Length: 207
Image 1 (cartoon, rainbow, N blue to C red):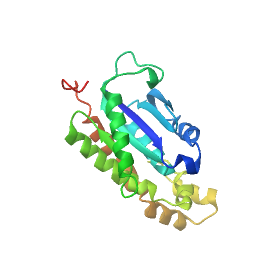
Image 2: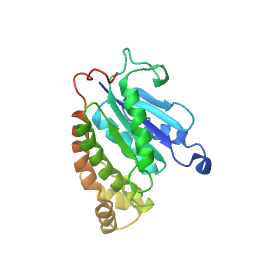
Image 3: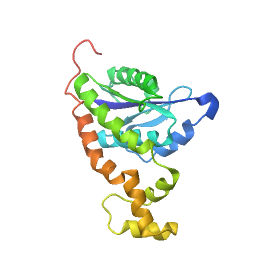
Image 4: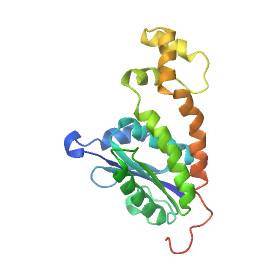
């Protein structure tokens, strides 16, 4: 079973082609099939594991330009180098998920999850949307602080203050406002819920 992500751009006529920027930001994330342009203003890839899928979602959410669909399902072996040569229900779920995410855009976070188990998918989607709301609400000033932080490292707020030439109190306020610690604490929960979407087999009729 696989976690297939389809990510397509909103308002591409107004903002231009942002796929290369997206792919550059996704490149460090472990992937079973690397993220690459599929068609037009869209990228697809297969996350290496649930935690990587969460990372990919939040990376795209940060840019505020993307509809993000996660499809949970099998791909026909062997896995290709690109999803243009792939087939299987994981791709179908991913396509339907990004279409649903696009319909949500505007009044809710444009993230959707579809899987053979609809209840598990809904639970994963709900937590991912909460995390997406946190990430999408951050200011550029907050990101300048957060980009210098490493989860679990000691003394890093003092380091960030020195690098940015601001007070440690200002760094602390940025961390609190951005809910960075809450995000880091909730990421494993989102990954666990995606893991629960990975059944041993796809029920008959969904392939």
